Each structure stands twice: as structure tokens, then as C-alpha cells.
Length: 256
Ligand SMILES: NC(=O)c1ccc[n+]([C@@H]2O[C@H](COP(=O)([O-])OP(=O)(O)OC[C@H]3O[C@@H](n4cnc5c(N)ncnc54)[C@H](OP(=O)(O)O)[C@@H]3O)[C@@H](O)[C@H]2O)c1
Image (cartoon, rainbow, N blue to C red; front, side, top):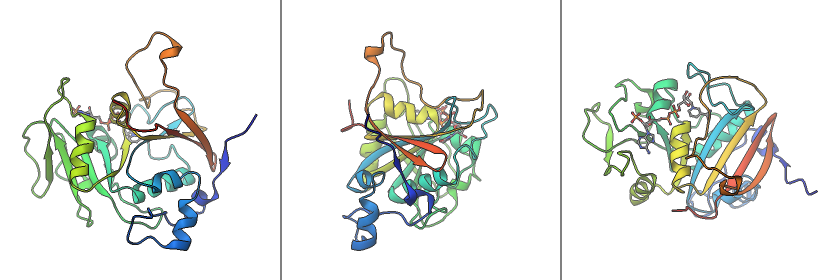
């Protein structure tokens, strides 16, 4: 049987991130080489809506207290930062801000910080969240109704979908209208699941680390099905990132 797994030294060596050939800073030799890599080549070619999750062997993305920082190994973390550097904007749910207080910047590899986008319909964002720090990249908060916000926060108000939430397709369109067409949906599980459930993802990276957490939130959760024929079976390639295994899942185009 053909083994589609590929060793990925370009992740482990923490090298620079590939730019799209459409990027004015694209450097022919170096960038073309990395853009041809099996992991980053397909992403570097154009707009994307890429969901990502780093999870344990037992499918957990955090402990019950919400601690998730050290699930992925060094190569998995470098990979995540490289995805951030390739994105125009990185999207997270407010649950991730409250649990992790992430900066959502590019630090483990060379590259530009993306815009940061937080889906926070109920106005739970703390005034001192680190994502609000001015690092030259804008931070948007997405809501469906007016909420009190800290000064300087850019607000994106979208109509509520039938469930009262933010429609991922509407958010993708609103960000595209602002020039953000390469989107990394970084977490957490609820946010990535909502994008997947409505067919808004073009790609999904699930990075599995050989660790057993045993309890805590699981990554993907979709509406229940009754028979295996109804399960999603997208195209998938696997890559080794140190001890982690990256499942690189391709949806030909956003569905729905
Ligand atoms: N391992 C990893 O790769 C990874 C990555 C990121 C985060 N995490 C971990 O995941 C945990 C947080 O994940 P989570 O699933 O609980 O939360 P989350 O996805 O970060 O945030 C969920 C919340 O965001 C809002 N939201 C997101 N999408 C929405 C939509 N389309 N419409 C309306 N509201 C939307 C809702 O806020 P309201 O409830 O206020 O309406 C929802 O409850 C943390 O423990 C964090 O450490 C792990």
C-alpha cells in the first residue's frame, strides 16, 4: 500500500514561512522552494479558510481546567506559527481568549503578525486581553448586537443567523470585503466545529500528539448521524511533525 506520510524537516527546522506567489514580497528561490512543500504549497496558492486543532491521542484539545499550551511538540508549534504567518487574519472564539489569553502573533518562525479576530457575541472580552495589545496588526471583535467594548477595539457587527450565532460564511465574506482572504480558524473546538458543520472550511489541519489527557474538551463536534455512510470522508494526507502527526484534510471548495 502506498504510504502517503511525508517527513517534514521544513517544519522541524523552524525556517521562514512561504509567501504566496501573489505576495509582493515573494522571493523566487527561497519562497518557491517552501511553497512547493507538500504541507504549505497547497495553502500558499491562494485564498483559504483553514481550521486547525492540536489534540491528544484521545481527542482532547485541553485539560478540564482549559490548559492547552503544551499539547503540541516544538515542530507542531512552529507549524501553527507558520500558518499564522501565512494568514491575513486569525479567528478564535471567546472561549479561547478566556482560557488562554493568547497573543495570536508570529513568534516561533519569521513572519508578519496577522490581523486578530475574536468571535464574542455576548461581550465577554476582558479589557486587558493580550490580543488587544497594539503590535501593528488590527484586532476585530465580532458580535451580532451592540456590546460595551474597550476603547480602540474594532467591532464587526453581523446579523445573527437563525440559531442566534455568527454565520461563518457571513464572517468569511465580511473579512474578504476588508481584504482578509487567507483565514486561519485557530480554535477552539466549538468555533472550528461551527465552521466545519456549515461547510465554510476549505482545509482542516488536525495535529495529533501522542499524549493521553483522559478528560477535558474534545476538538470537533458535529450534529449527530446514524450511519457511517453519512460520515464525512474528505481527502487527507498525513505528515510527521517531530512526534506529532498532522492530518492535512482538503475540502475541494467551501461547501454550503
Ligand atoms: N489545542 C488547540 O488547538 C486549541 C486551540 C484553541 C483553543 N484551545 C482550547 O480550547 C478551549 C476553548 O475552546 P471552546 O470550544 O470552549 O471555545 P471557543 O471555540 O474558543 O469559543 C467558543 C465561544 O465563542 C463564541 N463563538 C464562536 N463561534 C461562534 C459562532 N459562530 N456564533 C456565535 N458564537 C460563537 C461563543 O461565545 P458565547 O458563548 O459567549 O456566545 C462560544 O461559546 C480552551 O481550553 C483552549 O485552551 C485549544
